[in-house]
Length: 291
Length: 270
Image (cartoon, rainbow over all chains, first blue to last red; front, side, top):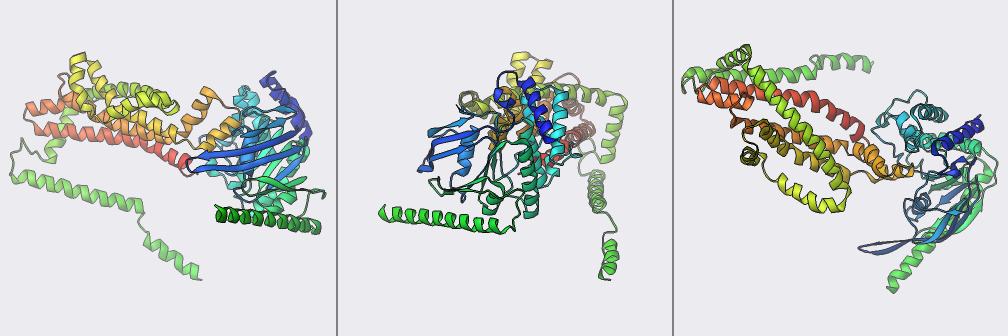
């Protein structure tokens, strides 16, 4: 049923966008290649290296989790992939083509849902479609289907301040899915939610992902979340951010957080993460004593 | 059990609704004020034509409306206010957006606006009279000069303080150029814009009244002046009361509800 939905959605988008973005017509996700990406922020107080030569190959339709402590540059990497920030060095290829700026085939979801408070749920979900030039009726019908997909039927006329945190994230997901992106970039989208809501949204995200086969890059600092969701978990070290280890999670889905193998893998990843953080602290200590 | 006891106590305490209570307090205060005023007026410290009591003022107010003078004057003044304020809003929002969006415009027109904002708008009256004579344009010019800079600065502040997350989300969803400005930056800035518009309306109302004092055809400001000429303090006070009522009504009917809506939708959200 979801498959059918996606196929007709891409037809809609093709209709609306014409020849400009053939990427949108691709069923499911596309591949993503991150090549030698570094990022240096220079401010008044000096320069900070946020990312150091990051290389990742993501297959079409893969669910990849970027795991690391806060401030390790993983959010920056996501912004660069979204085209909201530019890399100091390196290139990002989506479906084999280098990206330039933002593009509706790559959509970023933020921790704070970033919904527009002056629009109701329906209009928030329609926002991207409106930018693409889709006509009113078509837009409204499509938005309604995505609102239904995230189980918010009946809340079309609600405003952001009337929704709970979990509902806001659902609207944000519907808003992103409505423009049929091939790659979903999620920046700790469930970080501010309570554990129960988070679990439920994990399940919903997983089922949406399973039915649409979009490529997902999911940033989190929660090891269990990463192991529960990802095909692969990439562990980042703190500043300058780089990948220290890669784990492949092959457990069947939907995964249970009580599963023994999952718990073991979580512990293993946690150990690697601790080591990375310890190494970075030692390094900083050495720099301090040397400088 | 504890609940069963607590509930009636709660009820007894708040037998009178708190809003009713605050209205009663207000009523008592104003009744006292009126009585004091009437007392001083009847005591005869000042002659009645200089310090009329509230009853005389009420009389003036009623007769002013009965002979149609007050009603006509109100219409004339409100028409000027509406016209001038409409022009100010259009110009102010456009200027504010340009200043907020383009560094070049900010460094040039922006600093000019800041400078002119420091000038009380009554200072424009002599120039308005020189340029336009005793005409309708002169009045509207003064209203515009009173309101336009406040609105401009309000819009500018709103645009500057647009939460970056909205801009990121919008760009991410494909919004660019003028559509980004109209569909995201402008609504995101709405609370600051409404603030500027409210301040602008206050300035417009004040400068219009000042300008009308110098004017010879019928208007609210002019009624104040003719009251002075006729040594009729009752009329002067009656018109003052009318001006207050109009101000409070417009404020409460237009800006009150809009501000409440803004606070609810924009304010409570991070």
